Image 1 (cartoon, one colour):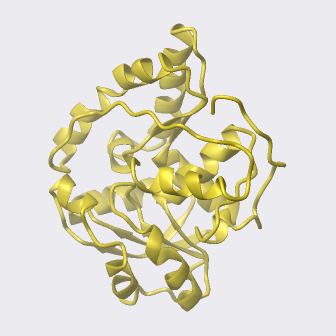
Image 2: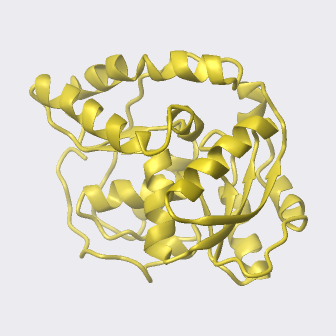
Image 3: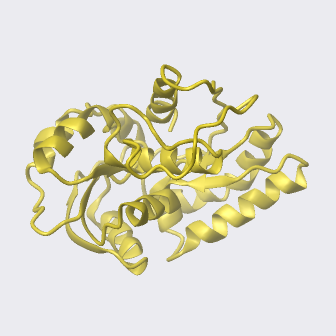
Length: 244
């Protein structure tokens, strides 16, 4: 969240008038286990309250698997509840979860059959697959890198995903999720993998930026960030927001 999402939004500044500032409040997690994910999600209300003190224009909840570990459809519950915290604080702001953004991004692409790469242990990957499929998609193939240490996930070379993606079975898929985790870097690999596979390639981070821009009323365009942010699926004209 704190690396690739600012990188994408800052790329826009070369082509659009708006300027962005970034603010974060952290939920603790060291190892990506279901137990720690549940504890982490419990901190989300505090974080939403703290960030709304800064009068931000949109909030992003970074951890996809934390949301998905709480049960099917939980992204809707979380987004509504956390938005409520900002309203209570007198600073209403829309909330985007990376889990909900991934579902929204796939729907925008009209992708029904997908393949995914995750950094998670296999049981958590299955949980993610089940969540996505409960939303009406079909996961034809998945790769689990089985990394439990959260810092190690964030320290990975994004270009390693170029070779990893070659192991995916993409027969019949409409899209590939190159990183179903905002913690695992993938942005640098997306254009190359997308060119080679000739299908849309997205990530949880790309989808989060797409929906954030949509919530802000900005054109959903970021250079070199794959098909979803190419402009082909943009739904609004660009506008400038003060203090965004």
